[in-house]
Every structure is written in structure tokens, then in C-alpha cells.
Length: 454
Image (cartoon, rainbow, N blue to C red; front, side, top):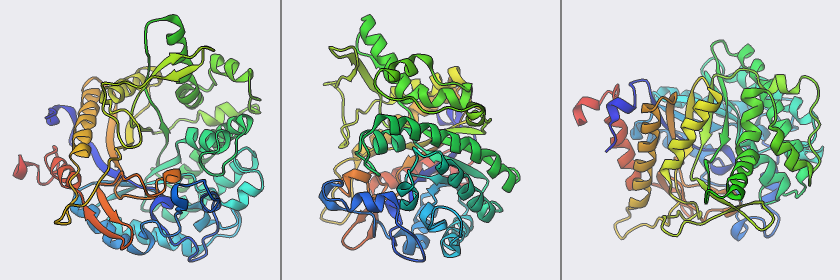
């Protein structure tokens, strides 16, 4: 077991996380408009088995009982996202009060349970009307997002102090606009680069808006990051790993913390894609000081150079892999946290997502035994503890995910939850990993039950 008292101080926060489209359902209720994921999931062949988020976990109607499960879990914090189409059905302009009312109820219920909310403003569910007007490659979308951020902050800011502007802009840009495997399904590298720039620009624009609406707000952004290891010491493999790191890590970290895009990556992009239109003042806006960086991490990447010198991932035959095909490699998270700390010096770090999908099944007695997930969490939390002991300013950890849910293009086939969802009935069944995490949290310094369970 990890040296808990040394690794995690009493003010370290323990939580879990979800996203609106993945759990809420109620897609056509109370004034919510169509999102890009509603449109994308309705296209045959885009999502496994033709599944959608129209019902999902029905959290929109079951939030109170779900929060009761969170309370019983013992978490002190909960990260969720707000659905933009619920708040501004036209993307901008008229506010849908019924949408805001739902998040009012959700926040109030969390606070009654003693759980602090961490709100993510954008977790990939762009209003379809804005996509029809050009989407994230259109610079106007940055202004729409900034207005939306102000609306939500104004309504919830008397109770919510921790704000995340965007979740994983790399995924939103490249998976959605470059490779077409996520909504809205475009396959244009120039669109992906423009979308990435505008996502970052909208983040920078929103930071002062949130702070202006919420005295004492703590504002950050969440990036999906992986540590990249060269497969060998050969110069070509080292260069390939460096390029892979540049495309998925430095292209987002550098503008936020250093106020510039990395020249080596821009040079590489220039050979095959039109670079984004970066205007005077954009990078100053993007690099507005933030209070914390959220890191989503699930694995690492071992990289070699392909025959053209481009990065190619190398599967490690001796390693364990999750049902997503991701290598279980906790040292990668430890190394990543220290690298970000040393290279960028963020004021604070949170692991805002970490978890694993495995082939969970119910046994004859109705229980869900998931020893692989428990082992995964124990090893990765241990890596976080080692990074904290080594000096990284880590302030909290959020398991992905609280509930099994709609896993984007994978539909409902992949289960990440601490709580099993029986989709035909929507019954919730806490898995063995839920009980393990509950016991782990209760042992932490500062927890009311720490002495009782020590």
C-alpha cells in the first residue's frame, strides 16, 4: 500500500467525474436543443450498435439518488459538465432558464451532501446550430463560448468556485474535425488545427469572464496528456517520440503556459496542413494565468519511427491492457506529472480523469466483481502519491467514471464506472471497486473516519 500520510496531505481532494452527454439523457426535454453528438450518433455506422445518448443513464431524472451514491462513496468533490444546448439552445442569445434550473438543483443537492462541485463548461456537446455556422473552426464560436461561460458562471457562481473551461481540446479538435471518429465527424486537418486554436482562445477569453462573475473563482483547463517514450535510443525513434509529444502535449501546453506554439511542431504541420490563423493578441489571451491544470491520463505511449520517420506506437507484449486497448502503465502518470511540473510550473495540478474499462459482468448474486479496476486504481493512485512526494503540486484526484455511461463512439460497450448501470432497467449497482475506493478515501488524513478505519 502507498505511504498515504506522506503522499497525500489532509487538504488533498478525492472525487470522481462524469460528462453531461454521457450520463444525462433527457435530450429533448426542458428546452434542450440538438448537440453535435445527437446529430453524429444518429448517423448509421458512427457509433457502435447505433447507440446514442438520448437516454444514457437518465441522470437528468435520477440525479438525487445518484448523488446519494456519491455521498455514500465518501468523495469530497465531484466533477461534472454543463450541457451548452440546455443553456443556450440557439448557441447564443436567449437563455433557457429550465436548463439552468437543472444545474441549480444538481449543485444544491451536491452541497447538501457535503460534496464540492467542479464544473466543466465544455465536454464536447457543441450546439448543432453553431456547428451549422462553422463550428470550432469558425472564430465566431469563441465569442459564443465566452458568452455561454458568463451565463453559467453568473447563475452558479454563488455556490461553485472551481471551474474548468474545456475538457480535452485535443480530442475535440482532432477526433472531431481531423479524423472524424467523434462528432461532428469532419476529416480535415486544417479544420482540426483551427478548432484547436479556437478552443484554446475561447478558454483564454473565458478566464477573466468567469473571474468577473465569481469572486474567488479558481479557473483552469483539462488536457488529455500522455508521457511519450521512445521505443529505443535510436535518433529516429527519439525524434518520433518528440514529435508525438509535440502534437498531442506541447501544442496545447506551450500556448497556455509559455504563450507560444512549438516551432518544431508547426514546421511539421506546415508540410501537410494549413496552420491556424493566429492573430495579434491571441497567444496573450490563451496564456492568461490559470489557477490549476487538470490532467486526464489513462496510459502512456511507446513510440518508434515508421519508414517515413513519422511516429508509430509500439504495443508492449508483456503489459496488461484494458478493454479500450490502452496499456496499464502507472509509471507513465508519475513521469507525466513530474514533467509537466518541471517544464511548465502550473500553480496546481489535478488528475481530473483516470480509470479503466474492463469486461464487467454481474455474478449470480447480482454483484459486480472488478478486481482488475481495483488493481488499476491502486497502482495509479500510488503513482500520483509518488509524484506528489517528488514535488509535483498535485491537489486532487478524480476517478473516471462515477457511472458506466455512453462511451462516445464505443456506445455502451465499454464500462469505466465505479457503479455498474444495467441499461435495460437503469438500475445502479456499486462495483467492488466502489467499495474499495470508499474504504481508501476513509483512510486518508483529514477524513472524519480516518482514525476509525486506520
